[in-house]
Amino acid sequence: MLETEFCGLKLKNPTVLASGILGTNAALLKRVVREGAGAVTMKSIGPREKLGHPNPTVIEWEHGLINAVGLPSPGYQNIESEFAELKNCSAPIIASIYGASVEEFETVAEAVAEYKPAIIEINISCPNTKKEGQIFGMSPEMATDVVSAVVAKTGKIPVMPKLTPQAPKIADIAVACEKAGANAICAVNTLGPGMLIDIEARKPILANKFGGVSGPAIKPIAVRCVYQIYRAVSIPILGMGGINSGKDAVEMMMAGASAVGIGTATHYRGIEAFKLIADEIKQWMKEHEVKSVKDLVGAAHD
Ligand SMILES: Cc1cc2nc3c(=O)[nH]c(=O)nc-3n(C[C@H](O)[C@H](O)[C@H](O)COP(=O)(O)O)c2cc1C
Image 1 (tube, rainbow, N blue to C red):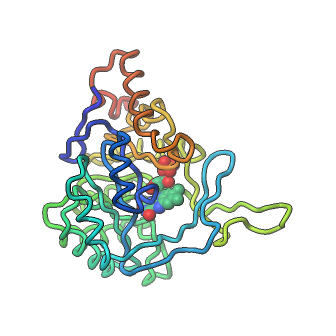
Image 2: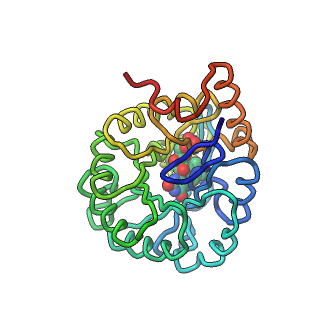
C-alpha cells in the first residue's frame, strides 16, 4: 500500500530523510533506514572541508526551528569511507552537493558521481560568490547554469535540484531546471533569513544572527511551492517543509509531491518519525479507501 516509486527508484514508503538532519554520518543514515525511512539524504557535500558557524546554530521556537549551521562539510575529498560504509544500505541514498560557483558544483558533482548514489541532489539555495552572493536558486539563468553543468558530469545518475522558497516565481526556476536536464525537483529548503532575539540579553540568539526557518511555520509556503511546481513541470517532486504527521504528508502529496522529506519532525517525534508518519499515512489511506500513494499525488489539482 505504501510502496511507491520516485525517479525510477523503488521506495518501501514515501518518507525520505531531508538533508542535514541526522544524515551527518553513515551510521546515522543506516539507523534512519532501520527506523523506516524510504530513502535517506546525506548532509550536503561541499568543495572543501568546512567547520560551519559557531554555536548556537540550531534554536527551537514555538513553530519550528531556526538554524545557521553554515553547511559544515568534510569536503568531497574526504567522503570515500562514508560511501563505502553505505554500500549495502537497504534504501536508496541521495547525495546532496553544494558549491559557491558553477565550477565548484561541477567539481563536487564529478567526485560524488564516482560513488554512484541513487540521486544527486543539488542544493541551489546557496550564494554564488561570483555574482555578489546572489542565491543560485533565485534566478532561472543561474539555476540553468548549475543544473546543466552538473548533468554533464553525472552520467546516468538522476539529478535533483533543491529549490529555495524565497524564489519570487518558484515554478519558473523548476521549469528552467527541467529544461536543463533535471530528473526531479526537491522543494523546499529552509525559508529565511529569519532572526530571533533574546529580549533579556538584548542580543540575537544565533551566533550567525540570521538563519533558515524550518518546521510547521513553513508548511503552508512549502505546500504552495509544490503545488505551483507540479503544475509547471512533468518530473517528480520530493516535497518537504514542515511535515510533522501523516496528514501533513498526505497534504504535500495532494499538492503534487511523489515523496515527502522529513527533517524538523525528527526533532519533535524522534528518529521514529519515519515509521510513525508512514503508519499515519497508511491509516489515513485505509480510512479513505485509497489503495496506492500514487493516487494521492496531485489529487488537489483540478
Ligand atoms: C539543522 C538543519 C540543517 C540543514 N542542513 C541542510 C543541508 O546541509 N543541505 C540542504 O540542502 N538542506 C539542509 N537543511 C534543510 C532541510 O533539508 C529541509 O529542506 C528544511 O529543513 C525543510 O524541511 P523540514 O521543515 O521538514 O525540516 C537543513 C535544515 C536544518 C533544520
